[in-house]
Structures are given as structure tokens and as C-alpha cells.
Image 1 (cartoon, rainbow, N blue to C red):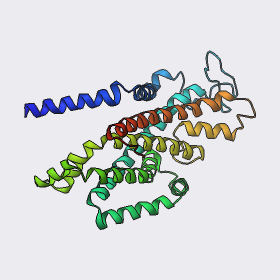
Image 2 (image 1 turned 135 degrees about the vertical axis):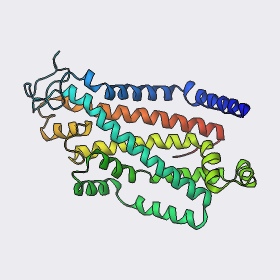
Image 3 (image 1 turned 180 degrees about the horizontal axis):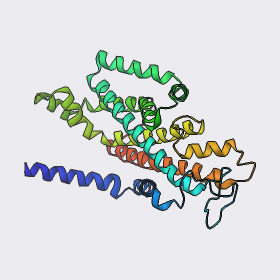
Image 4 (image 1 turned 180 degrees about the vertical axis):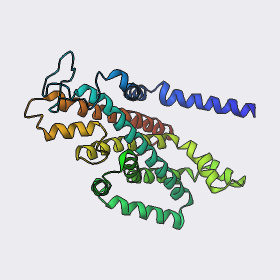
Length: 294
């Protein structure tokens, strides 16, 4: 038992050094995510004013008191940007995790069991892939205007797992033919046990790469929904900031401080997740001697 624990710890340390310790792209991506996470957690400390306070001069440019100026409603833009980090990350990450759970389970089951089960699951995926996902999300959201952040997470998460399921299935098909899976079957292990105790740990880098890509997709979807005025009307998010700026013709007023910061934050956070996903996938592909696509 002790030897087994030491072996598992050693393997975990080797994997950590390979995928994170010696991976500069992953470290940069993780650093950016940690920065935004700290901003979200410490928003009450960092933001100088309440997000919805309307006590200031509308359209005022950046000053020492208002680092990113004031919008047309007299609200401090920097404070709204800081508080918006919470909603954007909360919805994006939790929706991405929900999608990852569904996509991983469906992909593993379809790839390992194959046959009629795999065929039915993949046909379901194909049907959903044909649908214009964002349009469907928008329609559902319009009928669930009072759904809150939890509803946003469920809607985005339920429609974002499809490509991940196909990717996991493809990799599972390859792994299912390897000797360690045959050995597990010979030992009498059940299908679920083989899927989650044998195959899943060996494709974890692919799962992680897919997960961070799905989270990126969820972040962009949340921003799109907020920009279109959908989702939780009371929540402050980066997408909603862009929506209000657009509605008030911020560009025509030359109010760059209203448009650029939230857009830059969305792009930077999405880029950080993609850095991690692509770097993990490159390392895994090199180890397996081939190119693996998500």
C-alpha cells in the first residue's frame, strides 16, 4: 500500500512538472487566471465605489478619482469592470465545468462501449451540432428572462459539451485497444471502473485541454448573451458593459475607456485558457507520437 502511494505520488509529480512546471505557456495562462480570480474575490476591496452607484458626472473621462472614467449613467467604469469579473468568471467557469462533465461522460461511454450505445450517443451529438447553438441559447434565454445566473450556467453548460464529447470518444477508442485495458478486463473490472480508473487518467491531458476550451467558449457565450441583453438583468458583467456602451454610442462620443477595457478583459481571459489547453495538447501529442485535434 505504501509503495503504491509512493508510486502514485511520483507519477503525479512527474506529470505536474511536465505539464505545468516546465510549461511556460501553461504558467502564463494560469497566472492570468489567478489574477482575474483574485480580482473577483477581492472586488469589494479593489473597487473604489459600488458597481451601480450613480453619483458622478456622466461621460467624465479618466481621472485619478475615476481611473476608467464615468459612463452616461454616472457610474464609475473601473468599479463596474472589477465587479463584472465575478459574474463573467462565475458563469463561464461553472458552465464550462458542467459541459466538461457531460462531454467527458458521453465521450467515454460512446468510445468504450461502442456498438449501438455509441452510435445512438453520437447521433444525438450530431443532431445538436446541426442546431445553431447560440441562436438556441438566445431563444431559450428570452423565455427565461428571470432565470438568474444559475439558469445561465445550465443553459450554456447544456449546449457546450458536444465537440468535447466527440474528442473524448475519439481518444477513448484508441485507448480501449491498449494492453492495460485488456489486462483490466482480465482482472474482472467492470466497464465503469475501466472507463474512470484506467482510461480517464491516461487521457486526462486531453480532457483538461478540452475543458479549458469549453470554458473559453462558455465565457464568450456569456458575454454574447449579456451584450444582447439576456441573462440576469441585475448582474454586472463585461458583456453587459459592452452592451450599455453600444446602446449609448460610446464610440461616437470617443469614450474609448468604456468600450476597450471590458473587451480586452474578455479577450485576455479567453486567451489564457487557450494557452493552457493548447500547451497541454501539444505535450500529450508529442508523448503519443502524433497530432491530436480537439
